[in-house]
Structures are given as C-alpha cells and as structure tokens.
Length: 217
Image (cartoon, rainbow, N blue to C red; front, side, top):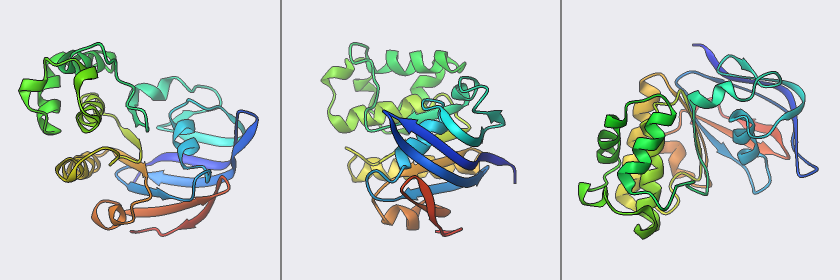
C-alpha cells in the first residue's frame, strides 16, 4: 500500500505560534483516518499543512509524492479540503457553483448534477442562489463541490457540521466509497461514533505531536 502522507519531525508555525511541534505520521492510500485531540492539538493545522496552506519550518513533509518544502501548490489540485467554513460563492446558484468547482479541478461540468444528487440535494434547489440555502444545504453543496473533483486526498474538519441525520449518513457513505476507490480520507471530529462507523484508524494529536495511534478504529 503506497504512502500518501509522510511527515517526519515536522514543525509548522502560524501567527508566530508553533502549531505542529515535531509531528511524525504516515498515512497510506485507501485509509480513513479519524483525527482526535482537544482544541489546539494540531488537527486543523495538520490538514492545512497537507493542503499546502501552511508552510513547514522544519522537518520533512511529503504529500501525494510532492515535497512540501519545494512545492506546496501542485498537490492542491489533487486535494479536497472542507473546513468549518464551506468557502462557497454565495452569489452563485447551486449548480453554477459545483460546475465552477468541476472546471477548476479539471473535471467535466456535466458531472455537477451527479454530485448534487449524490449528496441528496433536490434538483429544485439547483437554480437557487447559495445565499438562500439553509446551513445544512450549504454543507451539502460544499461536499458536492469536493466530490465532483474526485480528489485523491480528502481533508475534512468536523465533516458532520450542520448536517441532519440523513446528511450525515450520506456523507459517511461517500467517504467509504471514496476510500474504496483508492482515495485517502482524513477527518477531524470530536464525534467518537465516527470511528466505529467510518474510520479504519484513529490518531490522537496533542500539542502538535502524535500522541496515540490506534492502527485501527
């Protein structure tokens, strides 16, 4: 099984504060990794380093075969990142937004409809401006925008945020399907039940370092 993420003694600083303090971790293709830890443990920072949004100050970081010291931009086209903020263009219609994300990742705009159906959004909402959607509907649009790009590495921060019971179940299915197709999934969540239903491995961070690694959920 090939390695998708390989961090060795990685140090990263954001806002003058060390957010990763010598992190060692390897994640293989096809894994679904549940990141745990208290607020400030480094979960979000780890994912942002993986996505090339925070540079490393020391150590070695390789993501999808790219050395993150030399090239933080190239991996981004293969990565889907879903944070607390959905990062949606609220003046666009739902379908327009997902089509835009499809083109930006090199996918076909025509794939937008399939992605929207997969996340359970009725076609009557496709021509509605995003700003008029509920929080849960916006979250589904954000997930569809990730799905349509078929990322090799999925990074999700509190993925169930704003989703109802049905939406949570759909997202769990999508993550398992992605991993079964060869993608790698990393998500941070305080929900322990996600480990039982989705994760193949549980990793706990503390103080920007690896604290505990279950190897299996």
